[in-house]
Amino acid sequence: MAVEKIKYDSSWSDITPTGLNGLANNSSVNTNAIDNTSNQVLDYEFEYGYKYDTNPTANNTIELTIEFSSDGTNWTDKDNYSQNIILTADTSNHRKRFSVTEIVSSANYSPSYFRIKITNKGGVAFGSSGNYLKIRKVWREIV
Image 1: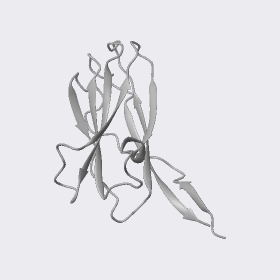
Image 2: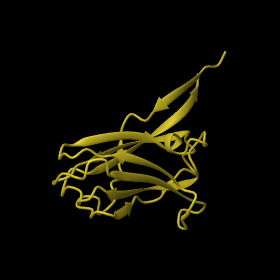
Image 3: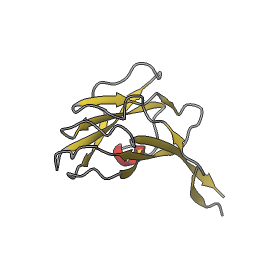
Image 4: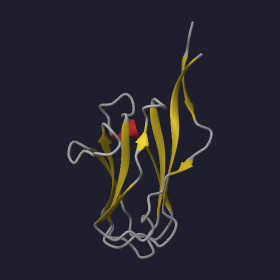
């Protein structure tokens, strides 16, 4: 009898968007397009690291949005899915893990093309270093 297992890539790939370090308050950056048409993986897991050099406003947020595209070039401007990270007033290094299917709770798989948009709503600019975004594939394996 076949058994279904979840398999993770053994390594993470850095997809940090240009401009993430030092990103001004109320500004956004996008990753490059993530093309799932050839990989056709079940899901993608992300690790997002963020840091402020000056205390952000407590309870303000960082917004992580998944934007969709049918061709990897033209992006949706509505009907996107977002998740907020609620901030504490400190300058520590923080990490957040999330997945496409976690944010897009109605999906059982990743879309053909998508990108991650990061919006700083912390009240101050991101730190000048220490901010990153990594990705790894999540596969369904039948054994």
